[in-house]
Image (cartoon, rainbow, N blue to C red; front, side, top):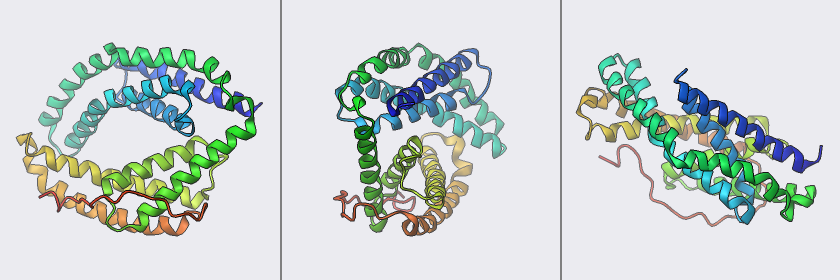
Length: 273
């Protein structure tokens, strides 16, 4: 099978997964429907990343990004409710779960979701008509260049102790998702890929607890967990820093160039107080 066919098949497969997740969300059959919908959207966006400048990708890229933004608040609320149940606060969890049903309806009725399916239907023919799709070798070169650029950015961010950890979390996520989208072209070793996932996990947990501490100021029923979350945030950031040191040793030196990564003041839970 030609590379272009494999590539298009991958995105069409994600369209099917997206359709199933939407159906499950409509039927309210399980608690993972929104999560799975967001995973499908995330993978579509990752597959499109190397072609950001290609006009044939614009409609689908923007539609996927819009659905990502649309679904983020509801997913955050799901995670919060799960945390509250885990901490033995069923009433606080139930309050948030009751809000989720309304959020799900808003997502399902929002034009952005239909817009994404419409863009997915139109995309294959538009992309096949584009110049890069006519040459598998060129397609692979574009993807390898995107992977190289992303890993170089990550190298520079990891080398900068003052680099904002919130921004670093996003950079790690993008690098991981891009490498997972094109595993056959990724220069990462198995150990490096595992390390990248470990860094994302630690930074993700830190980010959740950091954000929850901020919510305490707006949602008084969370006050009893503030100290616990603050401690967890500190420990998870420390774990993330340890994992980042391991990742630095495992990332391949690809281009040998020093990317110009904007300096951003580092933020931590302690800094916000």
